Image (cartoon, rainbow, N blue to C red; front, side, top):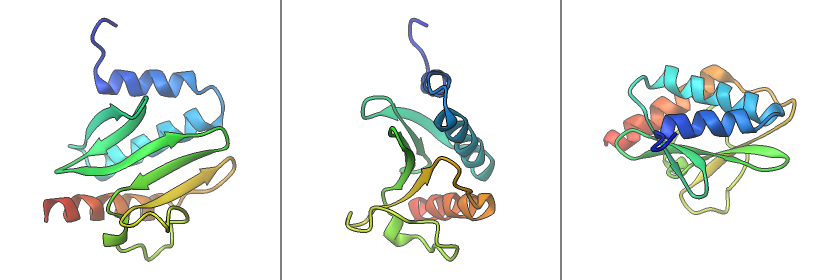
Length: 122
């Protein structure tokens, strides 16, 4: 790939993660796309996938032991299912840390993505 698109870079990132994190990142990406069919993907901060719609929705950072989904304006979003479990000290951001074997409430996650879109649209 001479000039890969952001989506192609994210595909490559998922393929390079040969353990549970690659599968989970692909799953989360599919949920984001289902929740917001016109979401735009970018790659920032040393290869981190970032999803946009009228601003940043969330990023998907991969660590050795977890996948961290960071919502930059997380404090502005209702989280009735309690998905946010990390980055409470981060000012306006909130995150969902997913570890191997964790279950993700897909319906609640997609609702959170939609809420982030609505917040960005203001």
